[in-house]
Image (tube, rainbow, N blue to C red):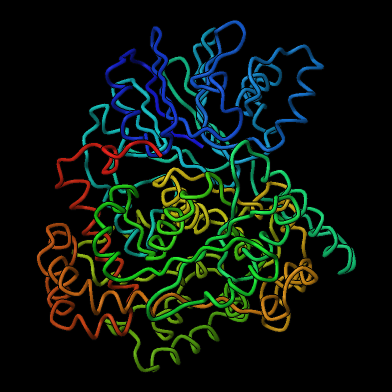
Length: 624
């Protein structure tokens, strides 16, 4: 795991060094740059596989005309390397990253199809004068870019791009998307002109222009088979995926919440670990699931570590956390990931985690609920009108303090033109009434890019695909990457192996949602490995803890920012801002996530626009 950066169209050692310097938390073990003619590449290294000097990046082929900087891991590198060696390729190191270079030499632009792993990479072909930027299929690793004055500037984190002199401005449409969804949709970021390379895509820059090309997408491949086949197949895929992610030249541990996803991964990983396999959990003063994590740890015999997150800790560390995250993430669970990673870094460099199970196997409660509502969109227009009229008399609709209320969300859901758009809209946390101005057409355009692949026929798969293309990479995986990398920890996600993702969209609905409970097939696949009370557990919420922080330790800070914050003054209607300020306690009680989303936005603005600090808040600390 590392931090990468570069500029195509400029050879400038000083600029690329500055870019690398703000990425050193991603790679404190080593750093290096390469500049030549019209290209500058930089790399901050977190050594995981091949800890020797030979694993350093930027890395080149034997002829010195293909250069690479990569962030992530290629899990099939051992088998793939052997295949490439048979074809005559000579390897200099034992690094998994070197297989990328030789794969490009052998397969050209199709090399990405052969990589099984998580990655964000930049590969420069000196002969062809071609730069390729690419992200893994599901977007586990971030990669941002900016095209300015004929130069393509890119980096693992947005803050590095600004070291190249790019001007900071807010993208108003992305801001609206953030207030609606708690994260930025599609390719956009909240910084105007700075975009994300989409998951499953490559950006190819040559002859002064660039194109963005899709190399992978979700596909529905439902097959006719019995339940036993699907369960056994998932178990085999999970075992292989977890085994591959245990390969490292440094200690590996795991995050353990006590839920089915993380518990399944720990149970499978334990088979490949030594006697001291470390697991990590967090709890809170007012809410805790630690008893379930302890139960799993005891059952599997792990060395378990717990951290209790207090409001005082959060208040002290929030400015630093905001610096690491680049964009405001309205999901307060960013806090959990940050402290988990900080504790884990004392013992390991790599952790396994259970991200992805909900989006692949329908773990969220709203999937079953939305499927019930899907029948509404099959009704004739006159019948739909009657239903919408009935919704209008439900108490609480339009309450400015509860945009997340059932009545508000149900009315919004049923007002959409189709089922997929309704599912996306249902996740909105904010009312458009908050904003001084709205660009609904622009937001509609962004949402139109977030639809499921047209070949998917099953309603459940269509909404799962929407979340796999949006909610998962842009909210949860972004949160996971920034929190772990802030603490120089690599997070690996066995459930998001490419083969498991593709398998998930072959599984029929009956094995995802069974008697109203999601992730049925995952529970069946690992039920022999875990205590029964873990296999049957439902996911619990996090809102009560956020509300406690907002009501106590963070109250004065939140009140000040919502009342006087310079960005919120610009974008929120005065009457809404005043009402929120005067009734803050009521708003927190009614919808803590609503208040947190606004608070996080103002904190982000102050950190990235009003603070002069340009380097990492931890750069004064010796490398770990």
